[in-house]
Image (cartoon, rainbow, N blue to C red; front, side, top):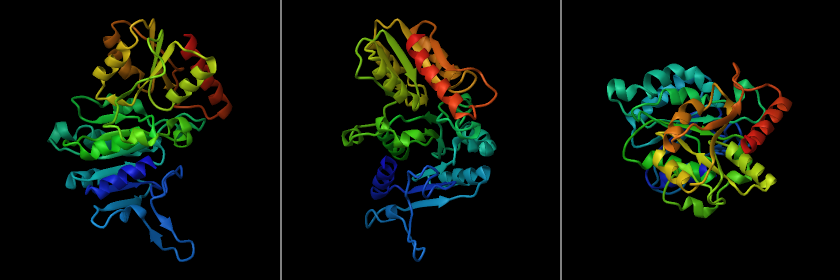
Length: 333
């Protein structure tokens, strides 16, 4: 609903919106209902095409399973229509590897090589929910490795309102940079990631989401993505009042000023720990660890899955054991 509100508010104000991808009209996880189909005569109705009489165009397409072709086309559209919000969505974030040549040659390097600006958005479903290796990881580490010279943005919004503000920021900001969004799967139906109306009325997207529940913590957990909600549930279960949990909703450009301000609210913290769901050789760990250590002035510890050649286990039972171990270690390491 936050996404629909972002799209609707943009087209009403005159910003065209285009979305394509694999099953994007309804979305793989059934959270989006962009096109309604009459079951009797197969006629179609797209509500966001009828927001206001003088609105900008809204386009949504189910694309073929050829990621390089489709993402390359959408990159070109973003170049031709810089005033529009152009989004491509992978069915699962892992599927973007079929478009790796477009990502390497154009999205990450196009500005540096040819001075060509693009505001294309990649929506990559990401999250560890007990599914198999091809349905878990959008390979955060690959995109972060490509980041330099403010060439693109890499974000993972933790709440509905954060996603709303992120999409609007991308459309309304006066410059154009590609945006990589690691979008949720289980968070689509997780009440902790929902947002009240007052959060949609905030001024802007928050690069770092602070933890108002804990003041002057003894331990600070840093993370990104859905594990922030699992950590907060685990903290509630433990009745822990000394651990603050901060979410990095923007990974690049790294929000050092916002993170420094958030950490400064816990001057007596004895430990700062990075927590991630991904294995040790994946995820954001290698990217954020040295940057956080420069901020705090000392080495930090990390909690993650063991290094692995596979992004995730194929066993739901093994996944549940691993996930609980992560949560336990985060509060006892």
